[in-house]
Image (cartoon, rainbow, N blue to C red; front, side, top):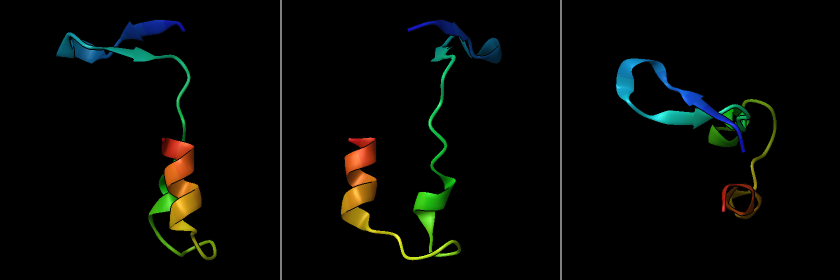
Length: 41
């Protein structure tokens, strides 16, 4: 996995990210907590 420096923090971050904003609420429909945890796990 490729990583890049994350600003001036001294940490590296992967070039590919997982957008999870829709897992935090019901704005776009019901969220299944089990499915959300499986994605993140």
